[in-house]
Length: 308
Image (cartoon, rainbow, N blue to C red):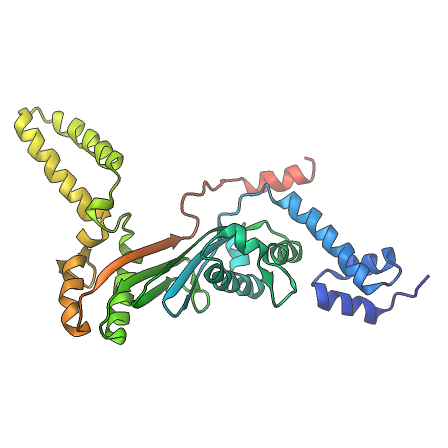
């Protein structure tokens, strides 16, 4: 039997990030074959990852990447905010945004992407990270946007690292004008979006069912006032206009000049840009949005694990 030395254990730990006992056991099980030991640990990591996959991952980070006329945003989830502060996790999330850029925001394609750093698929790299850190993680969503002639502006809120934070925003502005001025405008609009969370770009994009749902709610509320039907109709119309002002980006009051709507700010900026400006698209990812988080009694969880 091959003598397993401390140097061999250290080498395996350094290359895999595994714990000392796991590294030693892997070398013993594979008779000191370093490559086989790596595979043994990877198999163990895969089993560990599978066990953790059922646990809710609602924390994590959002990252953005912009290259030329194209940008991408991605959300990678973990179980705890503590892991979001881990440098290895932050590096993975940052790389995920770059991969999303190459894969046009397709999560499935991202998983199959060959990672130059590890010579493995990006999905396999995540599995290894799960085994190393000990928490369930997943690439929840990604999206890419681009312009033909213009800029992709970005903004990250609550940044944990450059281009990595709790909220990521991309804004696509089409224009043949001055790109520096266009980038400045795009950045302020991205910051506005992070603060105001619009759901639609224009009134025309608001889903009819959303409008009908709001009308039904407003009509019922107005009817309770006992006012005549014609007055109720006007009240509902007013509430719908207010609804548009709240959820439609172009109709929102600009956070840096509350006397103007976003669409007015864009129109007025055309003078400095030197050409017409079209707000083509925007995307905002807010960490954990839409994920149902479990509230658990930590003491009860520990007791359960101890069999009490």
